[in-house]
Amino acid sequence: MLLEGVLAIFAQSFGLTYSWLNENLIAPFMAFTRGFEFAVVFMAAALFFAISVFLLLKQAKKLPKSYAIEIIDLYGEQVSIDGVRQTFATHDAAESYARMYRDNFGYQYRFKVVGITDPGKS
Image 1 (cartoon, rainbow, N blue to C red):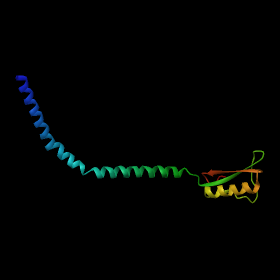
Image 2 (image 1 turned 60 degrees about the vertical axis):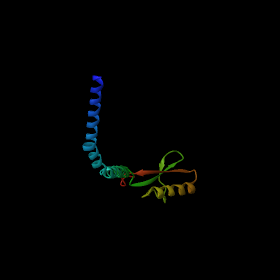
Image 3 (image 1 turned 45 degrees about the vertical axis):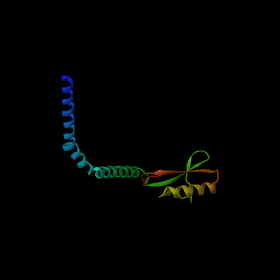
């Protein structure tokens, strides 16, 4: 009986303390932090966008400045043919010319597109 009374007092004091803390500490804190939900989501999205742009620009710096067509003859030696353009600013143009040269010269030469990071060297 004494134990039941002590347990009842403990349970009521715990319930009273819990409700007081909930009303005076937890509820106002949660109401205050709810105002920051939008800011947290916005900051996370902005951070994701900034990291994505940084990685994209970092990879763009690694791209070649120009492209060249390497011409390899039947013996596997690199040759240069008069009248054949070999340096290009874009990969699409170099690939297009390589296809055209492949069609024009047949199996006599192989044409391979390679990137050049320093345009002064070829």
